[in-house]
Picture (spheres, rainbow, N blue to C red):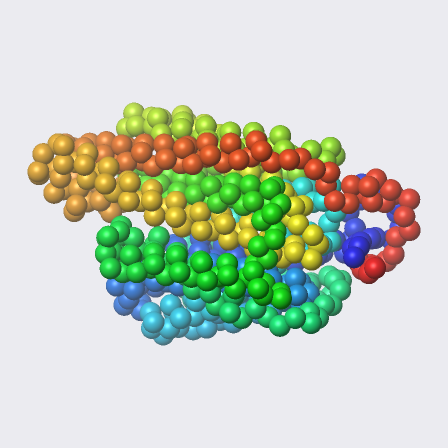
Length: 525
């Protein structure tokens, strides 16, 4: 099956087809919806809690969304492979918008949590569908450029999201943090329907319901265990050990079922490709480092360097700014040369170096120095995010692009969940031990002031504030060292990835001589 999007009036291969441009805008909007949602909502949560009176259930507003997203991600990918990516992608947007509308109309915290789960079910198909469609309509040689552009916009969204959330909440009300998704999603749906041309599919095999249920249950247990462990429940509690048992039993049963299923929700055969297995591991470790670093960097900036919540968002710009720049450059170089392994290796090396440098920060580190260290991490993240998805899509057959996209997305999601949980437990223990070493009075102050913001900390006595700042710096030191160790494993794995010719390179070299139509079209063989 060969896909081609073309534009009339020219045969120059350097020009972007009109249909492809419009399709990519639609995909980009859908990806923005998934990326911005939690970022915008973070600024609105204090207002939401105050209005709905649900402080005790605050964490579930985020957990319900994350849980549903993780469980639905591989299922959306497989449905796209079986029944056609366009229809499934539109369905995912529809579910997300339905959840957004209901969440905006919530009258109680319980309703908000339930509707956030609906949102998460749809969000699981947005990123997966977008990247899988890119794999369909863009040749491998060109894919790096477009993925780089889209990843760069995602980085910009990570910076702008919290600021946009504050503005929306202050001027329109928190409900518009959800309602704003409706017009954006409506535009994306119209563009996809009008421009995107993909073949319709109808699988003869039945959906692997049992495999989907087992996979969703196993993933949900894993997300809950990493979310609750060390916080709401101790790691040795009955609840956490029970979830661990469910993960083990569910995983074994899932493998047994998938080996016999006619159309498995996650074909185990894709892992026979060494590149796919290696890049899945790299993606997992990237999520581990990325989400962990982006969780504890604002904490360091606010507590140790005294930045406000809003300013800490601006101070993170070196991470996302460098990530945006390198994404665009790497994408264009990959398009021109067809080479990508160098970016994978260098990216993982920088992702290792960045946290190691961040681990050297202490109470005397200037914002300029910390900004340089963050830029190193951003460069590595940009190169890896670009390369991981590219290698994943290139390592499977066309029919399994949805599975490849969902697996790459899911591995990074789970890696981030586990990374934050482990780093959080390590950080908490280190802060408590550091304060305990300074005497019982300061140790007690740690328990009382651990969640205070910069403004509140500034009102504490100098000795307590200085001790707490040092303890937080010590805690982040440990978490960043752990991130560097995880990235070192990713670096080792990336060195074993084989660089193979990108799909579509030959067709692209001859595309300038090919006749072009007036709009996007699909040629089926």
